[in-house]
Amino acid sequence: MLKLVDNNHYHLWTDALHARALAHQAKNRWDRGTYVRWTIITAWTVLEMACQDALENNKISYSFRKNLDEAIAKKSLPKLDWGSGIWNEVTKVQEMRKDCIHRFSDTCNLFPEASVADNAINVVCRAVTKIYEHTGGPVPKWVADDMDHGWDKGRNFVHGTLIRKGGDAGDTNAIQIKYIYKDQEYESEILASDADWKKYFEEFLGNINAPITKVIVCQGSKVLKEQSFPIRGN
Image (tube, helix red, strand yellow):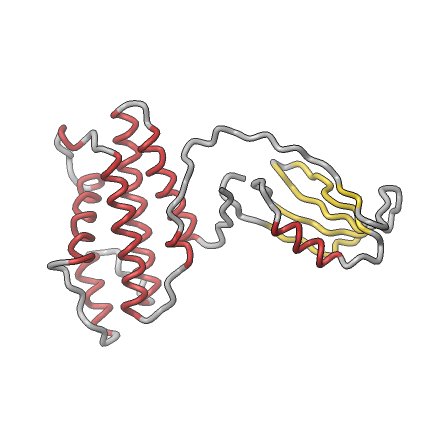
């Protein structure tokens, strides 16, 4: 599954999802514990960033609950219920995060099950949604992403060039659609010099199935369009 990661919040969220997937794929309890802790720490950072963004206050991460309550009060919004529901679950994830960062974990807590990572992702996902709903802001689309395949086992891609009607590989004025994959440039399509390249460009974007980094449309030495893609895995 290709993901167009278009902001820092989503980037960290995909990190947390990836860590959770690795926790499930780990072959021993040592590796599993590492990935579970990575999931908790990263997911918590995502929640802090979301609260800062939703409330337009970049100081919320310090003394999280106190500063979050103060930021909500400044905006004259209803208080959060820390005694039950999602925000009570958030406090439990925060305690797990403190165990990872600030405390010496007991031996019995050094080898958590992957379900602990599942819970952290689930709680943070719901809390991010709730804080935006609470402030009246739009819930970011990235929070709906709940999938990662874990280890990259590598894939082989066949690179070919499609010559469209009227296109000619020998025509120096032909329009070319190219892309960059693993730092190498590949020619995807050759169009007629008077072709509606924007139509084919949009078609190409809709059919991307490899973690490319850039698409270039050119005619001779003239670049007609260039677009970069922060796709996870490239």
